[in-house]
Amino acid sequence: MDDQTRIELEAAAFRRLQRHLMDERTDVQNIDLMNLAGFCRNCLSRWYQEAASERGIEMTKDEARETYYGMPYDDWKNQFQTEATDAQKATFEQVKPDH
Image (cartoon, helix red, strand yellow):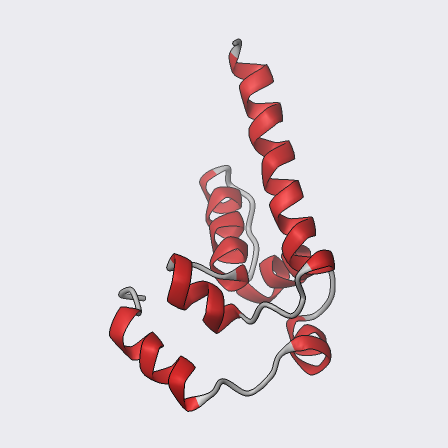
């Protein structure tokens, strides 16, 4: 497989993951993702920001989040985020990566 095809396939897989988390599984909370997978939507937006920076494209944290979430982050939280349970918070404290 040539590099351009590989890049296009990787980009398509990323877009599909993003669409899945943003459109199909809004019920899955970021803390659930962090507890199970060690990353969440915010991590994906940060990785997007870091990739832009590596290419000399300035992007703020808020701009990256809005690009990933498709709306301002506060709007996303108001529409979809629920309060973490004590059990979720306790699990997070046990498994949280260094940020």
